[in-house]
Image (cartoon, rainbow, N blue to C red; front, top):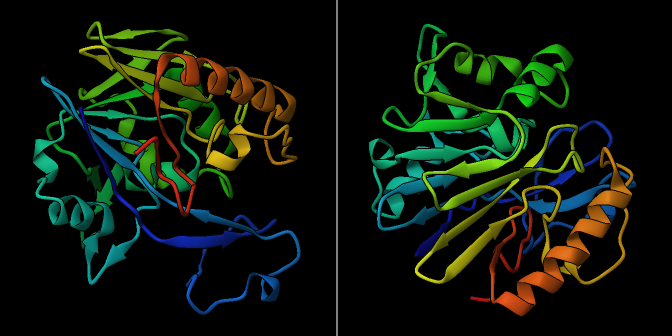
Length: 245
């Protein structure tokens, strides 16, 4: 399997939940508001023998009127139309902003027009009810009743090789994925397991729905992954998006 990180850049985020661009070569984290976190925003493409998978969809920012997600895909030789499945860990704005694109009259359509989007039904319902600032409902409301959405209910397996498990750890209906092919396993923990350094410590985050559960799951996954030679994808890691390389 081929893994392609689609970096959208580095950002700080504080209690306002606004993502502010951060240039690691010149910006000073100490000059940002107290409690600011430094994160990468990084969807992934995984190419398998049957699919071109997109895992989460980034912030949904546009550059000169073009969706950044699309530009990043094209820079790696992938047309948006080539994506066959979109796997959504959850619908927080930094993961779901690129679910759709908006035209010049304000109408939204799916950003990957030929893909099936795999979304937890309860996550969607909760997100639509909860709304701003964690959820930007305008950006993913297009999923509702769309023929290209496969609504998931709890744990399961997609096409016999993609396992999904609802953790209710970072967010109430967050899910994680294992992609298994030809003896190789790729694990995507979303915001339950966002950075390599968190896998190696007993870090408990106040911003998680259940921080203690997140910490315990990270320890469990890290141990099992080391034993079984998983490759980890870290959505918010500035230095190490894929481990091992």
